Length: 235
Length: 142
Image 1 (cartoon, rainbow over the protein chains, first blue to last red):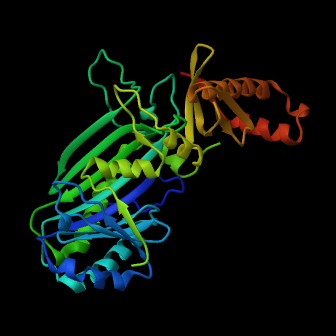
Image 2 (cartoon, one colour):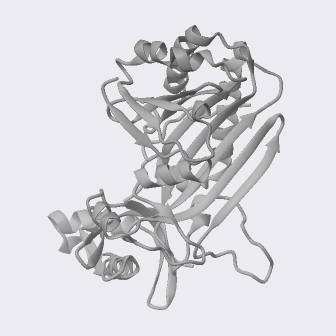
Image 3 (cartoon, one colour):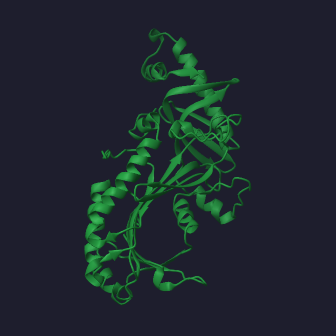
């Protein structure tokens, strides 16, 4: 599978996350500080979860975040993830994820994994045309529900779950707007996950596969006109 | 530990709400009208205006398509919304974002017709720069 590596100057990505889940390791709670201490120079901010009735504190991750809030890592007794809000490109993202994972694994020595997941969250600003969302300018997807209903929509809210090989892909497409109603955008959120026969030693393979699936899906979904806009072709 | 914060931990939708919130957005209600808190409105006013591509518009009873997207910057000042494009030195205003956009697109259409009619001999400086843009900006009726 050929993977596009181009980084678009106008990219709509607002958050990229890669997460691994594993059978609970209670030692993570007692050694969380050791992990933090290894990464605190880059991720000094500690975000403590707010616990609500009916939740299990050990399963809710702590966040260790960069001081500018643009990237961070989340840890709980059964999960570890790295997120970026200013996507540096796949190679840099992967390199940092793997660096953090090596540090994390020094406190818990992971083996079997239960789930791996890659998440691409895009926010695509748009201007309405004739009162409708011009989604066909951005996306190749055909959202026509019936022949006699025009596929022009004032609002959208879709959640789709599909399978591609071992990968389960959840796609959310939703129109959003700011509360002062000056900003409108399409939320396009991909979550590609795998749950079968996973092992820590293969994490690099999983991140490559998940990224490739999500990136290829995005590239296939967007129109050539929108791709040109992402490359900076505009007035 | 040098700093402590608390963040919301609702599973699923809360994550999306946080991402949207960081970007000054909220899920758009499909059936309900959004309820705006006064403090939320104040926070929004301080945010960077949205920039979005414009590929087509409706004016003078017709639909038009642009060959290259015009980047529109939206903002709000008091009770007025603005839609502007720096390159074309144009802005539209109105009480709603839709009115501001309609104001801008009618100006784009007007100046597109104006500059294309104008002879090259009659333009210099800024006028020449704008004519060059409008000459390459193809507007087709859909």
